[in-house]
Amino acid sequence: MKIGLMYSMQAPARFGVRTVDLYRESLAQIAWVDEHAPGVDSVWLTEHHGFADGYMASPMVIAGAVAARTCRLRIAQGIVLLPLYGHPLRLAEDSAAIDLLSGGRFELGVGMGYRQDEFDAFGMELRTRKGRFDEGLDIIERAFTGERFSYEGRYYDAMGAILTPQPVQQPIPIWLGAATPVARRRIVDRNHNLLISLLTDIHHTKAQFDEFRAAGGTGRTALIRECWIGDVSEVLPHLHYTYREVYAPPNAMFAVRDPDGRRRQITDAADPFYDSPEFWTDRFIIGDAATVAAEIARYRDELGIDELVLRLAHPGVSHERQMQALRDLSEDVLPRLA
Image (cartoon, rainbow, N blue to C red):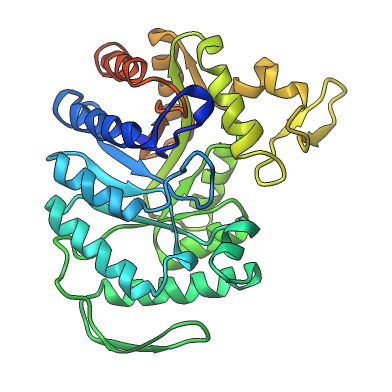
């Protein structure tokens, strides 16, 4: 199982973080990992729009900067919001450019988006997201063949189009996010790779990957997890910020089982669930180096996934503390998995 790192480039003012510093420091961290952490295989970027903390809105631009600062790491998108990107042929062209800049290290992850306010900001109706996504993915797939093609859709047309210059990889790998059985079926049908995000616990996550494989999925599989090497109290304020505010209900809701055995969804950001061990246990990977290594091994053995993507760059954590966590990961955690 390979190990990746996720960056979202968030600079919440309450923690005294400036975006300009965060960008410089994050690129320095990634460059350090590229040179000094051979056990880490990839860096993953993500996308949202309109957040006060500057949540990364231009991940393809950042990917180009990462390509220029690294020599070894794979550079993956987890994920680009395809309907909001503009014409999908342009996304294919930008992907080819990053692949060329990196010498063939780029992987494109795409999703359809889910937040009403983001679609409002771009003047689009949320109900069009699936149609835009499906057509956009059709065009990207055809562009990645390297052949000239035409396409007529409801949302996008392409007449006599061809992707040039061609990327190094033929084709560039494509990852799709999927939170439902229908979405996972789409990935199986298109023969792409499956990326599962942060919210599910390990048991629910295993069911998702098992279902994907049972349906005939042959693509690679990856999972994103929050991670911290240290005491949970140190990182809990930053996790509270992320899940009580940034991913707050109803945009992201945890499903938990109460003491009486009934399953319920967390719909209130003030719910005491966020202060309980149930919030982070079996869902996030947090503890000392030995505990984190054991949990990573557990995910590897129980899920059988190809890549585990860890977020150590929690919004608001200082550059110095993040660097220490990266050193701990490289020098004390990953060697225990050998």
